[in-house]
Structure formats: C-alpha cells, structure tokens
Image 1 (cartoon, rainbow, N blue to C red):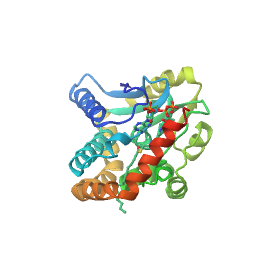
Image 2 (cartoon, rainbow, N blue to C red):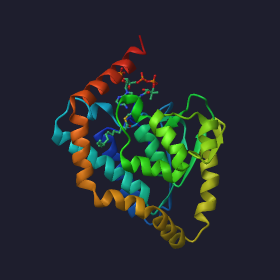
Image 3 (tube, rainbow, N blue to C red):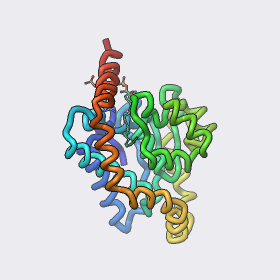
Length: 243
Ligand SMILES: CCCCC/C=C\C/C=C\CCC/C=C/C(=O)SCCNC(=O)CCNC(=O)[C@H](O)C(C)(C)COP(=O)(O)OP(=O)(O)OC[C@H]1O[C@@H](n2cnc3c(N)ncnc32)[C@H](O)[C@@H]1OP(=O)(O)O
C-alpha cells in the first residue's frame, strides 16, 4: 500500500477514508495475507493528521474527522493481516501512530527521516490511545520522555529505543520489509492472528469502550481558542520556513 497524498501525505478526512477503504478491500480478499505500508511522496512517510481538518472548522466536522482517525487506528491496529511499514521518509505524530500500529517497522537510514509523536511541539497532546500504542512499543519511561518533549527520533535513536525494528540503507527499505514478511507468513495464520489479538485487544478495548467520550473530548479540546491559535501559529511557521 503506497500512500500518495502530496505534498506531505497528511491524513485528511478524504485520505483517511481512502486508506480505510483500501484496507477493508485487502482484508476481505482471502488471497491477501499481508500489507507493506510505504509512501509514494519522496522523503516523507507522513506529516500526520491534517492540520487543516483541525483548524477553523466547526464541531460537527471535528467530530466526523476524529471518528475517522479512531477508525483508521482501530482497523490497522487490529488487522488480521500482517502489516509491515517500510518507512521511507519523515514521519510525524498521526503518521507515526500508523507505523506504530504495524507489526514490524523498517526505517530508511537517512538522518532527515525522524519519527515520533511530536504533538506537544504544536501545543496539543497525544490522546491516550496514541500514548498507549507508544508505551506498548517502547516502554513507559521512553514514552513518557518522548511524549512530553515531542521527540522526533532520527533512525539510529529510533532503533535504539525500539520505535523501529530495523534500519537499512534507503534503497533497501522495501526489500528488507519483504524479507521480514517471509518470517511472519511462515507462521500458521490462525495462531499468529489470535496471538496478535491477545496482545492488542486490551489496548483497543480502552478506546472502544470510550469512543464517544473520546470524540467529545477531542472536539472540546480542539475548539478552544488557545488551541486554535497554537495550531495557526504552527501552520504559519511551516509556511514561513520556505521564505
Ligand atoms: C485535557 C483533555 C484532553 C483531551 C484530548 C483529546 C484529544 C487530543 C487533541 C488533539 C490530538 C491531535 C493529535 C494530532 C496529531 C497530528 O498528527 S498533528 C500533525 C503533526 N505533524 C507535524 O508536526 C508535521 C508538520 N509538517 C512538517 O514538519 C513538514 O511539513 C514536513 C513533514 C517535515 C515536510 O517538510 P517539507 O518537505 O519542507 O514541506 P513543507 O513543510 O513545506 O510542507 C508542504 C505543505 O504541506 C503543509 N503541511 C505540512 N504538514 C501538514 C499537516 N500535518 N497538515 C496539513 N498541512 C501540512 C505545509 O503547511 C505546506 O503547505 P503550503 O505548501 O505552504 O501551503
């Protein structure tokens, strides 16, 4: 699955919906057993959630958007398919969440390709299920520091803290993901799937039990004047970077 939403693969409502539909199609076709998730945007895996979906819109839109973000995470996190990410670019916040929801992560060895949950740098916070997904991957202490500081880890550090499983030269990221896949596909499917569910269901259930409350919390939080101002300032900084 090659993500293509130029220029930065931001996860707009439309793009989230496309990803969901693609995932559902693959999952319902018995011929498919695995996905390699990668990017078609040079140097960028994903810039995360689309800030334009969270800025200057009305509460109904925020609720619809957040429901789609939840749905994408739940579907990827619990997918019965083997999902491996071949991370071939910078990968921020919501994009990083998507990669953390995969079964295995290969990152291209380029110092520009940092990844992490950097929400605090924008003046917002990573929701509890983003946090849980990170804790499940790198452990509590590393996650606590990374989340508070909004750290984006370059490849060597991402490997060292366990945020990714392998770092390879840029031109080998897809072939390394394919080689890894062979090991996962050699395991009897039902046993692997049940084990994945055993490991992940408690984390997913936390959100499933509180889905509506989580949407309301998001809408309340994102609608605050101070948060809207912080997002506008961040977007402005991104634009000024060019001049
Ligand atoms: C107490 C109660 C608590 C309740 C809590 C409830 C909920 C919690 C609340 C909120 C949770 C929200 C979680 C948010 C998750 C996210 O994912 S936020 C997004 C974070 N992403 C980023 O910080 C990355 C920002 N982008 C960049 O750093 C760079 O763009 C880059 C990815 C490194 C690429 O750089 P470069 O190649 O130089 O490209 P440009 O910067 O020039 O960007 C090109 C254009 O794309 C626009 N853009 C970039 N990122 C985004 C984005 N995420 N969304 C929308 N648009 C983006 C950028 O502005 C450029 O636009 P123009 O060409 O100038 O128009």
